[in-house]
Image (cartoon, rainbow, N blue to C red):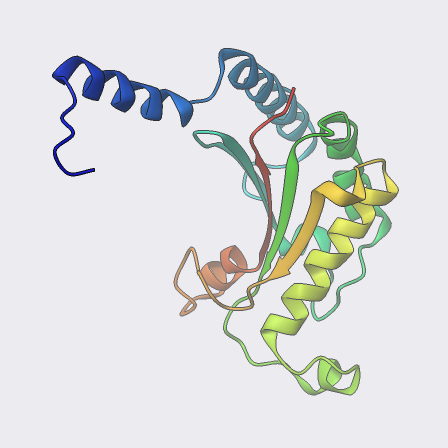
Length: 184
């Protein structure tokens, strides 16, 4: 393309088009904002603030649930009360059939104990993956479209607090659901 020159107006127009292409439409923004308000209202009336948190990102919503609310220590099966907690979110998430939901599991840095080792769990990453899978499968059982939900375990990576105290370790043991964009 040597020798080709663009006018300043053409350059600004192309730049503006590229910037706008990355923006979210008002309709998508409004749909995401509506889901955020619904989830926030449901969570604030059902779950203590120190056990779950909803964060509105630019084009996503992140729900962080403390592990102790969902799983007994050293386990990846959700008891009935935890299923009820996730079950209250599912009716809001299920209609978002074009929204990808990423379920991420995290642990603290305490090594896996002998009880989990006997069950075949050899690392925090594996435990966090099983917990993320459990939440994902429960969401699917409650009507969330399987092709739009995925799970990933991160183990002790990406701590949100220091692992030097019991309170910090408790914050690091969490499951995050991220709703990316909205096709509505």
